[in-house]
Length: 205
Image (cartoon, rainbow, N blue to C red; front, side, top):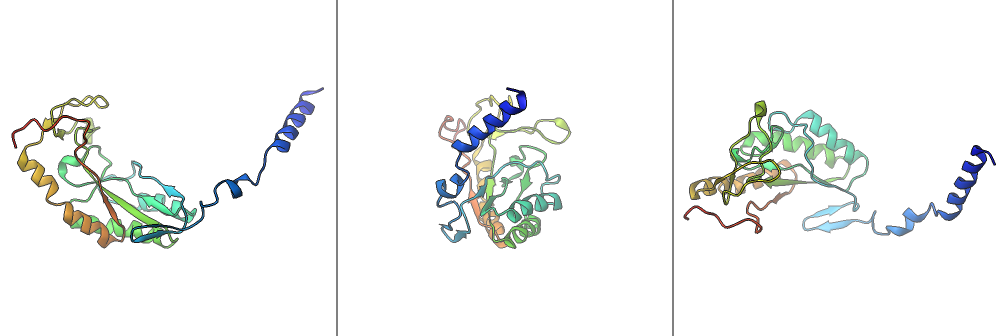
């Protein structure tokens, strides 16, 4: 038996055992609508939140809009936008989105309108990295602030413990930033800043 005959025989055997209609029967709910609080997804296909590295100045730009619009055009029911920093100490990398003032609303509105045209729901995320600081402009590390001065194994950062005034400064704008996200046309999820796996704050409260 030649190589070509052998390959044809193997292919025929695979075809005989494989049901090419499995995708229509195995995921019977995949293309069914799903209600999440005030939002109804047209299907259950989701593009999860991830860092695209596309923003260059902390705002939503044309590249990010086009990136998310392509996913909406492809039929995704829900897009979770990459995280948005809630305070200047949240700049964990030089391509993070920032939602610290009203100038961010226009960019968020543009990406929301782009995906809404295809019936896609857009969620945002309010975020503070704590000790998870990766990089800053020029390759220098930002100063990291966290509940305790516990070193970060991933980026080898030793954070400064949060003082009460800085905690208040980080938490105070959250309500306005949540409002900005909703004004722009997409619901915003509030991410927790403190994680239970880390020790309690070491600074006196």
